[in-house]
Image (cartoon, rainbow, N blue to C red):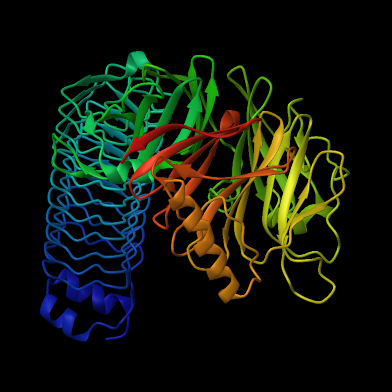
Length: 634
């Protein structure tokens, strides 16, 4: 049996057993008329049935894997419980058909007419139903995870109890459609139209309704955690008994309740000082009171430096897991919080204002239009304060891309610095008092500082000083031609200068305190514990060092004075005033910061926050020295 007529004859005789046993691997039945026949259980996999007439045909339990059914007439066809993976039904006319309990994974229904079709309990995993006209059809209990419905029309259809997780429903039109107990998590409804609908008890977590039309649409008892309703008019967002945590919307999102601050919270927190108020913020991992699920809010607490620590922390409406990077800037009324916020519809630059009382208000938000994920990571994205707003800078190859906010308005642009590519790994962008950015700035120049051609830098620091900037670095000892090891600094309008040649310098931070460069550095003398106030050369023989230390301690005991000892590891943080050439060891109330020191943060206005295992210490670097302003016990 080789001819098409022979195979058709078997089908028309409804001799399914003979057909299934003898049919070839591939079969061409283009345009065949099989209307009204009972072909229950037939194997038509890899068969070309394009333009065929299968109306009123009984194909229950048939095998149609990889079958081409494009343009077929399927009016009144029984397709219940078929196995039709990767089948194609494009441009077919399907009316009063039954696909219930069928496997239609990866099937293609693009541009099909689906009128009064029963898909109940069918599997349409990653199926394509783009630009379909779906009228009065039942899709109850379907599994259409990651299916693509973009541009389709749904009229009078039922999607109750459907699984549409990660489904693409962009630009779809839903009219008189039922959504009840549906899983729509991570689904895409961007620019879709949902009019006069009620979505009841649906899972809409991480769904994307960017620019969707929701007129007369009601969300009732739905979970919209981390849903994106960007650019949806507030008057069109109607919620009843819904979960709105971490919602991206003009409607204020729910925030987790207050929590009691724990020791690790303080030790993990970043800080920003404004006036006499210190704001601490950190990523928290905790259980939600309502759902019991693990959440990661961005927690904040505000401490007045002359008052006791508040032991409660409030949360930002944006969860920490969606914050790509953020920075706080002090203002006269509190702080400006600038963050890169990841939403389902893209990355946004968000500008919040935080008052001293802890109230958070949104000032502006703007989508970043240039491609972000490939290059905009925290180490490559910097936010800086300008005269009238803030600037976001990112490096992509040799191009510096920026977005500036000016009184709530956003602008984008780019400048190329082809000669400065080598410096991008070391040299950040900085703000100067005049609002310009140097050394890589809006002036497109590197005249302020030229790096020696063969100089290999590490631990390079930079800070704005008045209308210029200061640089400090440690050269890498790659060859004999390198400068002396130690700490170098270049202050405004001065040549680079070697400050310390001591080899026990471990790391350093450059600080601008009220126009004066300060250098915070950690050092180790590789020697036994040393009493503070006693300077010992690092190359001194051990015998002489021990003798001098003993004499020093005898003198202290004779005067009945306490002996503050440095740590046994001889690691200490030192603040060095570049103008007065004075150095000060950072000490807490109990003496020197011990080896349980964790890290150090530079705050505005010349303040330094040191974290130890037991407390947070706030130091003020001023012209007369270093003062411990505040201690927060962890």
